[in-house]
Image (cartoon, rainbow, N blue to C red; front, side, top):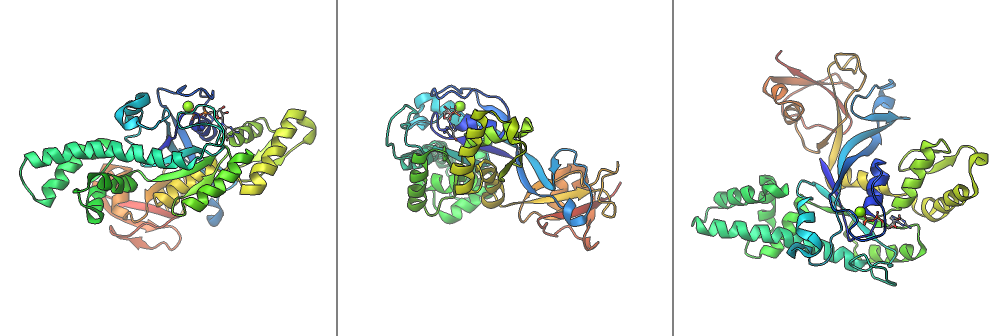
Length: 387
Ligand SMILES: Nc1nc2c(ncn2[C@@H]2O[C@H](COP(=O)(O)OP(=O)(O)O)[C@@H](O)[C@H]2O)c(=O)[nH]1
Ligand SMILES: [Mg+2]
């Protein structure tokens, strides 16, 4: 699964990316400093089931720290988008292309009001304009592709709905849009109004979470309240990418105890210099006390669990030992779409396991499970298949 980070130039995309991945990327405040997208691994966090089962786990492709499981996801930091991007302004077409495979977008909004729509320094800028223009640019980009697909459909002179779905699927698959997305969108809207249809299908295939960024600044805090008031149906999470970077750095140096998404604790006051002490104090007072956390982790988690409606499933080779064949306890944590059946899950692990699928066993109840069993959050599952 891929999460796309989008927003106008200098809103803090690269900072958010760095905060989430700890990959050193260019952060400048100069618009268009990122041209090639940065791709990296960030983590979704959840309470690991090791606590519930009273075992010490031994993750292979994820991390468990103090009972918190860190599950990797791919993040993509795309260059800044400006009004007119869908027509190619500011290399907009290329940048939009970089977003094709994203399942969900985090729109980083500079809430401070100190940057205009192009990322240039200004005062009293209203960030709600960004919320609207960015969504519109993506919708218009979708609309362009959909229009071409509809023209193609008109040429093959048929009016059957399944042919329409077929043509749309072929033409839109490059945008990460599936047949299911298209069927769902056609239930809600007709293709008669292309722009509306584009909006509906974009909401389904690339929903947006808003990161109200730079929340450490006073002007951002006022603008954040206004945004929440204005867009009651949007998920808006206050973030300070800069604070998250500072906390992770301080934690790496052993200066503080910090798990992403939580509060932090200073380990030894005497090891901090004056600048560090002041910085941490500001983060505590302006960010943590007011909003609970630096927000970056919450944004990633909400994107996956609330917006995409994913759950976590732990496949094992032996439900009694809760381990794989090599004895690693709770080795894997998989993110799967809520509603996934056991057999679909088997296929997603490996096509061969899917083809040889017999059934499954659930660790807590030791119950036998059939192909149609719907996976639940935190299930520990052994899949049975013909050897
Ligand atoms: N105060 C504050 N500044 C930030 C925050 N995030 C980013 N910035 C600053 O905003 C400017 C642009 O950041 P950058 O990550 O390069 O933005 P991008 O162009 O969207 O990738 C830089 O000067 C950052 O230091 C934040 O959370 N708080
Ligand atoms: Mg950047």
